[in-house]
Image 1 (cartoon, rainbow, N blue to C red):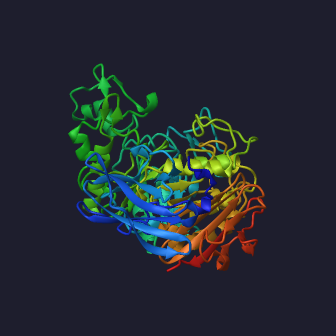
Image 2: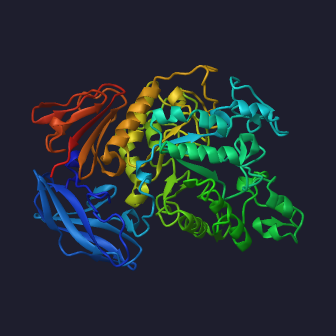
Image 3: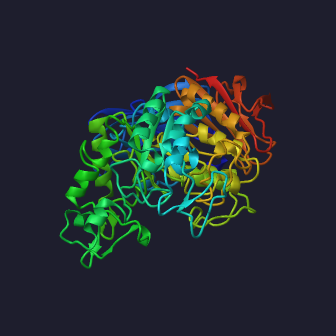
Length: 619
């Protein structure tokens, strides 16, 4: 049997669906598509390469691929498939001159043939705006970002427990959702300078509609911005000010549920004859209803209702449409618990609902983006025909957390649920990432959110080994996908669970903080903006050990090589031809130098280091 594991990671064949490997990134039905793979001579003499693809549910091989490029010992092969269906999948068949046969899919090289579900994915659904892949996102929880002087005029709502800006955050138990710091949208406008200096070009706001909690995921209306936040006027001014600075603004919409205080729910509760009665899953004369995970304050929407669709998601006058139109002109939506929307019992309208939302957005402004929250594995459901990218933790956040796992930190059930308490090594990180990213077509992969943390989970800094945030942030900004800074990360804030991480920002030193991360984020954002390979280039791992990972991002213009470490690794050695020309690369982050010796390239492997090198791509 062939000894596949003897092939170094740096010499593994590679394909990932990016533009280097699939030049046509927006195929249409019936179009012929070129599919490429690079193969190194160390695999042995290649006799034949084919693409095994799906057509209408059946499998077919292409004719033998042709060699189209030689780059040292690397050969580039190209085959052609036709987009017979809107969704297609494929993998590679590689036969050597000695008769050995290998199969190559997103998880690497295999001796045995692999299941179709593990194939590369290509489809005709690429529709995300061009600016999406260049996005650097900043997430804001409005109650905790900044409080303007205008907020002083608002009375504390009846549901709320008023808190001063420097008070400790209630992280669990009574008062968690009621603690009210009074941050508002005017306060966000006042601090747009901070975001611009940080390098942000998209602001993502968690819900801004009125509710009966500080998080506002229990909306009482979708037709106005909460007056406590400054109302419609403040929101309109924020979008105008952000656009003037070249920033996008997206909102957060709960398509799965509303709050019990919502006008639609109140109109139908205990009133079976109300027009809104079929908006929810009522029973027993509308006295009982289904809710999100049984939480009674969050009744679940019933998307069989045509009237609900009309009012909420369908057409320019719906809730979805209203905020994308003037006088607001919002740039997109992040859809809360998208994975659960339209699903209950035997009913599954998940895809249909997402497609209706997307059509409404496209009809109003096709240059908007729609991202779906999907806390588990999103790959085989998020294909771009609905959500254009996923806010998911499985493929980036959790593997990175596990690599930097601190056994002394407090793990919180709910985020690492079912993952167990363990510390993964760098090989595990690469394996896990590849497994969870495999099912995404490339255009979706570029628009997945890559957060280190969010308002729903602990702060990375609080969970991880000390000093690792810099390294993890470098990974955020150099992996495919949208880097996400959760407000406060740049201040070094802590938080041992999601609620505790919703800390008011210390604009006037109201709480202990550490701004050492601020210039790091600024530098990483600048590097991301200025290097095309980091926005849309291919992704290839070339080294992995317990303590270090090295990977490459490439497009036609340039090659970026990134080396990150957890502990010290004195043995980061690469074959000279792993990345042709790497010895002459320019370091643009970290300051580490590449040395040439004993026919290998030696990369710096100091503990908790991140280095980024740049070179022009080979012709």
